[in-house]
Image (cartoon, rainbow, N blue to C red; front, side, top):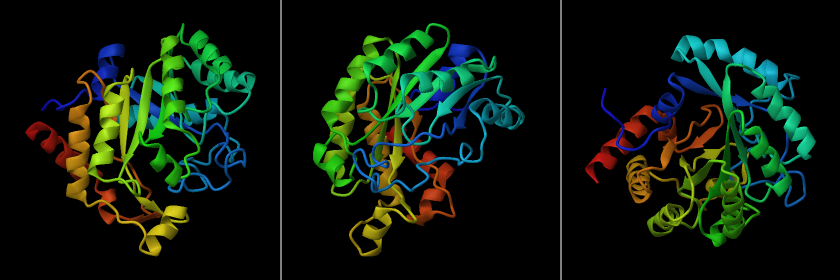
Length: 295
């Protein structure tokens, strides 16, 4: 099998744990300051009301139940032996520290769980939460996943992100002070950004103390503000070849030791408005990897 032309996450996990490790996506039933009125009530322009959630918390499933439900299918499909509990939906540090500790411990008590990966916003990690996570990391690995999306404040304002690049830099600094690894989410194709701005984000991240990156395509989801913008001709989606070239060049700018956890997104077919090619994930990945090798 041909090696990836970048440091991929599966290889990193296998090297670290000596076996196949899979993420299990969890819904902790939390919300977001960009949804609950603290910052805004409409969220980021690309985010649907579910916030990438599974709805399992609303269905009454605890963290422990969600883990148990997911493990066996992943064992069968991937021969996984260990799992990372991925708190994905909404902002997973946006609650009282005691509430968060209880949620995280539900996952960490599972003997098959090697660690946690916690998706959140850089303006929602007070020192009390980071101190608690540092304490938990003494027994199992704890990753923080920060949604930056762009290294340009004007873009963050345009997409109603509700935080600044400076808030991201501060969160990364405080997280790394505690020895916790950081994964950063970025989006290519944001409104108002061209090649110059997107590659400037890559150069900005190349100078930050981060351990991993997830690169996402901006696709239009039904019922979002971006959907309204697209419908009236105010937004153009990236073409597949255009995205593949940008993603490859983005990766090449980053230091080789940075782990690439994702190269494109996974839209739900029933929610996707555009671009249609976004559902062809494997084809897009192949195109990106070919371009990385050619650079």
